[in-house]
Image 1: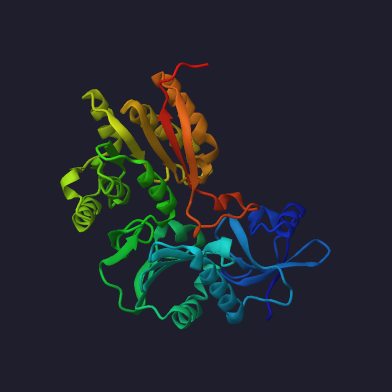
Image 2: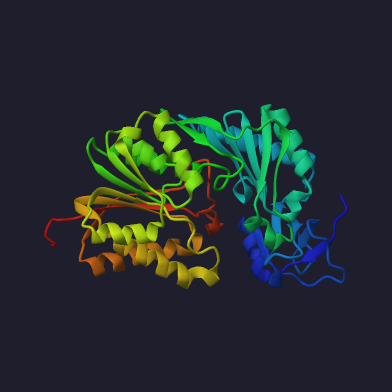
Length: 396
């Protein structure tokens, strides 16, 4: 394979040798002739020693994403086939569901490729210009490997704009219904793969849903805030809890109601179509109190530039959410913004201090096992959930 050679700075060289996959634009020596957007390039150190094959981006701040560090394994169809096969094999350990993430980008050695499986339908996202070049091969290989009923691409704008790619949503193969029925932990859920958040369902929250469902007791009063299509709320109601689901988007709330009916828990659920920020404040003002408050906001800081705004928003949410807890009540806070993860505990501590509440940590959980994270790539760990209980015991 012939490809353009690019020299990287010492900082990038060290990270590549330590299994990091990203090279930033200011770490590349500007070539006489720049590669095209999406080209496979060969990365070398300043002495010309091979480091990796990578996807090149002419637009993104991340200028190169490592695919292979073996000089004898260039990026080709055979490499893609081996990586896809290995990723799917690893997911065989994910049980009690027929919906899972099969490929998670850099964590599976396939930068920019997401593949989620909903029963016999695959929904994929292509987030990089390099992987965009291999779309046809990827779809062919997935069909040979899994024989799905259909393959849908959900490559949304927010992931592709930085790569200079247009947003794309279309069926790539077979038939993809408007709704897909999945199972998780003995419950059933409708998924809208064409219009839902992410690829239709929050697969990464599977472990946290399971742990919360184990702990919620019959008769508990639960607020499921930012409910989306009601997976947390339905799980709580299935344990005999009475649940208020708060969701601003009417189509998502309609799907949540259908999921409640599907699991025969609709008689234990109330629905609020409204802004979660304002509902939390208003509910506190009315004196409402809950045994559990489940708080799963959208990403509040998608870049470093958003940290200040995201921190303020999370603090506001937490102050009002903590005010809704009964004595010994539990808050489940999920943060899905990498740039806020290291700050979230401090923000929670400040909000608790403002409320005069002592909090006991019951459990911490991360993204589900089919969304693996790499120690040398901290940004692959993007989701953390805290279970914290209002502690009424006297301080030591």
